[in-house]
Length: 246
Image (cartoon, rainbow, N blue to C red):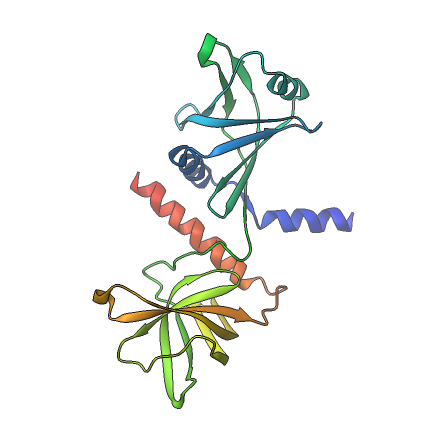
């Protein structure tokens, strides 16, 4: 059915199947001691903590309690979905092979590693810092001095805005100013024309010799998914680098 194909294509943008990336996200959940909510098809839910993620055995372990009716109902359903949050990122995955290991006050839920993990992000909040090797820039004319062409380093990117580094030797740009034409060069494959609204002008530590400009992307076409793709790919590469360093 066309609707089903569209929904599947939409989810593909958030689907993570790389074993390295799945392990990296699970390790982040573990390190953050993030609460994990387990839900079943009948509305049953149980909130727990991940105790361990064994990369060698490909098993997960969650805290559990004996005699909890919510957990018992959830286990009987046979279908369990886990949801957790890392700052602005929502992680979701199916739990398979769940076994309730009872041991007095230290019961646990053991499960297999998920083969697929979905990563969703809150549209306006989640930001990524560009990779050091890419050096993305925003190019536009200084709003107070049209003859001055600027190429400002991009500090971070979200779907609703960017932060720019304004060096001390460049005339200040005040909060409230709108920049009608700006060209973003994010990487070799991603560039776009946007408009900016300067919302925040923040001094950075003196050693940086510059100021941070917090900018809103104005009039974005949300059907254009290049920015979403860039943010997703940048975060994936960061996770891969973290996994390589472990």
